[in-house]
Image (tube, rainbow, N blue to C red):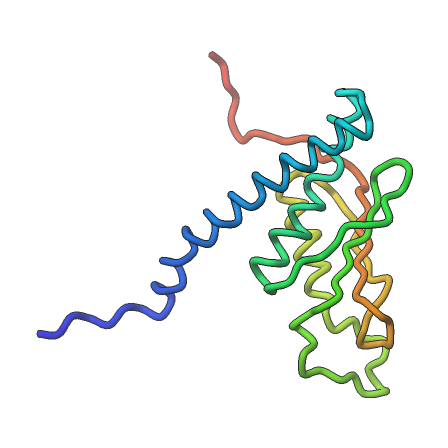
Amino acid sequence: MAPAAPKSGDAIFASVDRVASINAELFTLTYGAIVRQLLTDLEEVDEVNKQLDQMETAEVIAKVGFKMFLGVTASVTNWDTEGTTCSLILEDNPLVDFVELPDTCQGLYYCNILSGVVRGALEMVSMKTEVTWLRDMLKGDDVFELQVKLLKQIPEEYPYKDDE
């Protein structure tokens, strides 16, 4: 009897560990360089801690998340003075490779699923955010720009009590 053919998803899931390992190594090296640069620029450890806390999540989404799921990276820019709002800039977006919006759909944010994904990912790490489109290449802009605004940190709740 011939061996059963592998399920269609098996090959994909088999390569996930290898891809995750490569992404983790790249992130580790990049993160070290970021920390070193912040220490040089800011000179105070407390200020570096504050900056890392604010920027790490946006950087991971821009550099790792978009790369894993879309094959592109985004840049993080336009931080406000409070460090609660920034922009994710996509110069390339494969979701729109074969898309042209008709005049009747000019109000449509075709890639709005991305704002939902970013917002959902941030909620998973206890951050309530507002994610809106500022620029859209389907509407004639030069890039895709998502604005991410932190509304509040959600306190983590544990489903059990640790009485010990």
